[in-house]
Amino acid sequence: VPRAPVVVVMGHVDHGKTKILDTIRKTSVMLGEAGGITQHIGAYQVENKGKQITFIDTPGHEAFTVMRSRGARVADIAILVVAADDGVQPQTVEVIKIIEAAKLPFIVALNKMDKPGIDLQRVKTQLSENGVIPEDWGGKAVIVPVSAKTGDGIDALLDMIVLVADVEKDRIRANPDSHAVGTIIESHVDKSEGPVATVLVQNGTLHRNDELAIGESMYGRVRAMKDWNGKFVDAAPPGMPVKILGFKISPQVGDIAQVPVAGNDFKKARKQYAGEKQGAVVSASSGGEGGSAMTE
Image (cartoon, rainbow, N blue to C red; front, side):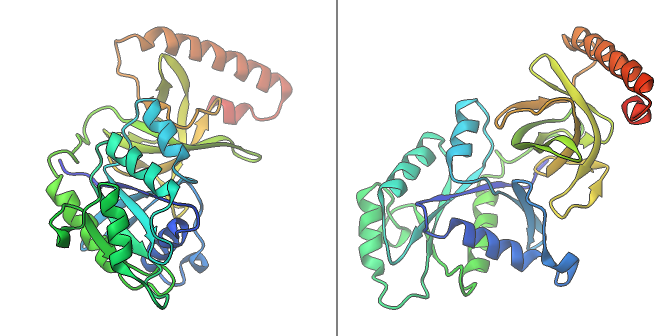
């Protein structure tokens, strides 16, 4: 069935990637909801015309490149941010190559349109010289003028994402009823919560208490899941990013996490995990503290 498209925003440093993501996020956060402060989990979802869109909010395109090099196809659509006053820069050219290598459909967001003296023809010429030919010049590149500062054009950009996702709908599908599999898009160790990671569920539905494996190693159990608003959820369908508590050790960005299917090679891993867990319970209960948490 169709799932939420996953969008990655890339571009030259200082061209406004973060500002665009912030503006999209602010327009979608309910006013007054926890003062509009959201947790940073490396991704978030917005709704446009009744459809969910997932944005990956990772620092720079390095994380995206890491994910790709490890065989994880994470994004469905890319947004190439180009500052209208600055034009195409060396990093912009690099990003164009990354997007083309990943065979991703993309939209060009021409940012900073609020600045005076913008020469659109110059930017379009620079883009054309790098193989990105605008639609109005007979090419295929969709160009949306925006201003992250004023919010102008952001709705048009979201509409365009929904349109591109519609064209690509045969590819943006998943089976919510299968065992969950997803990619780690953010990972760190929290002082109070231990190893924490954000998983972007790509197929299947992830449930609380599901076991999680990476490769043939058991990495823990989903003790709790939070959405990007910090709300606890019991299930995460395809296309949804969730912060997971319950990892034994921190996974790496780009790792593929999955719920093991009964009866395959995971039996050995599961047995080993149960043994390690039993040992931890014994040591924890003898230490007095944290026994109940470990048993859970």
